[in-house]
Each structure stands twice: as structure tokens, then as C-alpha cells.
Length: 630
Ligand code: ATP
Ligand code: MG
Image (tube, rainbow, N blue to C red):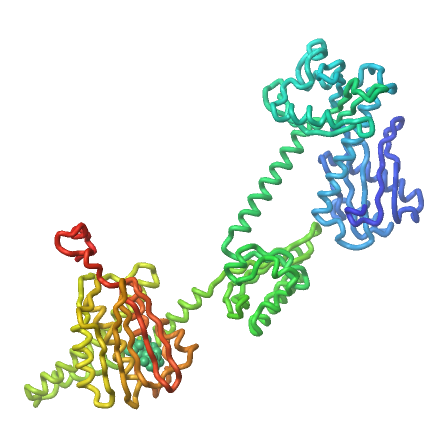
């Protein structure tokens, strides 16, 4: 009763004379109730169990309204009854009940079944013991062979008695068996176990129980549970063993299957990438699957008894409670039907940032189908939301940024087409505008394509070759010097060549992006300095300005596609793709890029590029055939 949290329990067994069930023992509340009520209930139970031949039958209110009524009048709010079986025959039942609701949960029902089964085994054993006879030394008469295997054997294992059931079980004649060894057929490991355990039996502790596999006549292995008692002489030496055994193959098979299915479900739950939570009705976590560590940064134990709403941001908490309210309402409208709700909610990561998850919640139910907990499955959708955000940024940016050059192209081409007095110098200037704007559009589209290739894991196509950057940088510095009188541009470069393996167009565009930014975001002018330092295996480039700068939080995001510190209409125009493209190129070449910036003080972008190894692609070197050598 303690295990089952019941406050009343009783056992009834069939009387040997009449066969009708009688109360054998009882504990708890029932004492208060009239004997007739109890007798009536027992009769009902016997009838119910006779009608239903289930090996284990737990009656619920719905299955037996009369019994349920009697039980309720006796003060039971929840109860369970299981038959007691001996050698396959129902010989009585065991009942537990409790004054509070839902005490007999599915797991307690199972425990009740197991206890009833063990009680059945114990009863069978007592009976078999009785068959073995009163005096220790006396060879018993023929037992009735109801199924329980009974034998006696000497300390060396020689059988001196076997009952009918034993003969039937092994498919041998008694004459063959008596005189043979009890250990025959046992495999090496079980034989060792049996002999080892024998040594531990002493007069103060003469009994043990072991479960072993033995071969049946048909050749398959069956599980037998042996209860063995050692009989000692006056000097404490073992004279013989008396054993009773029952075939527990079916139960072991069921247990194994249960364990296997439990293991499979556990594996499923524990390897799932989605986080699986179970909550009690006060929203406290009762189970959290290990995926929580990768999604929310917590170890499983750290969330013990945490309240779910505490792990959600303010607006998500509202959404979660609303979803729960909807579920409750649906349950109220059609009790017992399964409903689920899916919501996008933002949960706090252990490090404080928000993680977007798509959470599906549904009720967990007790044996009576009433909700007694909540199952919540959370899928990390931070990346998906990021991509969605990017797509919407893209639409805005593309519409805005592509329209500007397109308008120029349309305008100048219309001038060329419809203006009658266009002079040749004007016409070539217009064409030049058209070409420039078309180039700008091609640039934007190229960046977009590169980003979408990278997002889909395809990588940016490159045709690398050995490039000397010294000249490229010097020419570019000179170009910007000419184009801006506001800025002072300095380039401090090594004396020798700066050789890297790269795609010439892309690397040129990388420097152009960085120079453009330095100039664009330093509207008041100032010094722009570019340096290149050589290290044994790489170059370190740095481009620094004295412009508007930004705060560190913004500097962390500038490499994200479409991110612009100032995206207002009055800001300098741009797509927010320049630095994304720069990072893609640097990383594709095996380098790294980062930014340091201070608001109002200026910005420094640094990046590394691997140095072209002299042996890599020289003519005649082992690498000459390498397709990467271009
Ligand atoms: P484009 O695609 O035309 O280059 P963009 O310059 O806006 O557009 P990025 O080069 O990716 O895009 O830069 C992203 C944002 O980072 C810019 O909008 C700007 O706000 C900020 N930024 C970049 N470089 C600097 C810099 N040197 N000084 C200050 N802010 C900068
Ligand atoms: Mg830029």
C-alpha cells in the first residue's frame, strides 16, 4: 500500500472447500464499512474476473459501473483490482484504493500487477513446498503437478526426486531424470552462478532464488525461476536441495520487449535534435531531453523544477499562456480528444540571448485520459528566422538599390533615343553613365548571387591564380587620392611583391569595397591608411580611417548580409552587402576578417590572406599538375 500510495488494500482468495472468494487480509478504511458491502463487492469482483480472462485485469470505473459505485460509496476515489494467479488459474484478487483522485496512475497500476504476479508465485511456491512434505528428510508423495516444477537433488547435483510437471517440462521419464544431474543443460555461465550461490547457503540463510535459462525438449531456451532451499544435517553440512521452479519465459519476454521498446523510445528522445520537455500542470519541467544543451546552453539538471514561463521573453510568455489557454478550452469542449498548438516563442539561452523556437504543446494524460501534464517539443528556428529576416531585408534593399542605377539607365537611354540634338561628346558621356550604372547593377546582383550560393552551402566559384597585390593596391590608392581632395591616403607596403593565390576580380573588388567604405563613412575627411605586414605564412592587411565609426555591438554585425548601421533615408546609400562579400572572399581564400571601430573616432578593418607558397605552383614542381594551380 505504501508503494502504491493507497490508503486501503485487501486480498481475497478462493476457499478450498466452496471455491468462492473470501477476504484473507485487509488494511485501511474498509474496516469502517459493513461486512455485507464487503462481501457483495468480493462477489462482484469474482464474477468480473471470471468474465474477463485477461491475465491481468485492472478494473476502471468505466469498465465496471456497479463496482465503481460500491467503491465510491466505500470512500474510494480511485482504485485498482488485479487477479491473483497461481499456475495460470485465477485464485483470488488484490485490491487497492485511495480516497484521493488519480492515485492509481498507469505506473502504479503496473506496480500493482507486478506485486500480484509475485504474490501468485509465492502462493504457488508455498503450495509446492506443502507438496514436498512435512518432515525435511521425508521423500514426498506424488505431487499433483499443477505446473510448478519440483525437485530435490544432492549437493553434487544428482536428482533424487522430480514431480510430474518437471518430467513434462523436460520431456523425459522420471526414471531417466532421477540419478541424472540437476545442472545438465545449463550453460557454462549459469552453471557457475548456481554452484557459486550454493556455497553461500548456510543454516541461517538456507534459501535463494535464481533465474536461469534451460533447454526445453523442443530445443528452445526457456527461463525458469528456481527457489531453492538447502537442507542441513546437525553439523551444518548440506544434505540436499529442494527446489521449486516456474516457467517465467513469457514474463521475461514481455519485460525484455518492454525494455527494448523503452530503450528505443529513450534513444529516439535523447538523440532528437528538437528539445523534448514534459511539464507538470504548474508548468515546471519534469523532463528535459539532452538537446537542450545545444539549443539553450543549459545542462539537463540545471532546469530541474524551473518554471517554463520564466525561461521565455515577455511577449513569448503571453503567447505560450494563450496557447495553453486555447488547449484547455479545446479540452473542455471535447474532453479526452487530443489537441496540439504550435507557437513561435523566444526562449532565453543560458548566456542571455534569445533563441527562437517553434514549440508544439499538447497534454499528457493519466489512465483516465485526464490531462496531468504537458508535452512540449521545441525546434530551434533561429537560423530560419534569420534567413526570413534576410529575405525581407533583401526585398527592401534590392528594390531600393537596384532602382537607383536602373532609373539612370532608363533616363540616359531615353535621352539618346528621343533627344534630337545630342552631340557626339554628350552621347558618349550618356553611354558612359549607362555603362557605369549597369556595372553597379551587375555588382549588386553578383554579390546577391554569391551570398545565396554561400547560404545554400555551394560556395563562391573562383578561378584562382597567382596575383601580385602590390601594384593593385598602389594603383587603387592613387585612384582614390585623385578622386577625393578631402582625404589623405597612405599605403605602407612591403618592398617586394605581395603574392597570393586568388581570383583577381574578386580580390580587386575586396580592396575597392574597403576603400569605398573608408571614404564614404568619413564625410569630414581625414587620414586613410592601408598597411600590409608579411608573416611567415600569411599577410596581415589593415585599412584604417578617422570617420564616423560605430559602437562595438554594431561592429559585430557589419559582416551580416544587408546590415547597415544607418539605414535611414538620409544615410549614404548602400546595400549592406560590401562587407559580406569581403568576408566571403577572404574566407574562401583561407583568411579571416574582423573590424574594430569606435563611434566618432574611426574604424579599422583587418584581414589575413595566406601567402602563396613558392613551391605551390612553380613550373616543374610536384604541384604543377594540381588543378588549383590554374
Ligand atoms: P555597399 O554594399 O554599397 O558596400 P554598405 O557600404 O552599406 O553598402 P557594407 O560595406 O557591407 O555595406 O557596410 C555595412 C555597414 O557598415 C555600412 O552601411 C556602414 O554603416 C558600416 N560601415 C562599413 N564600413 C564602415 C566604416 N569604415 N566606417 C563606418 N561605418 C562603416
Ligand atoms: Mg560598403
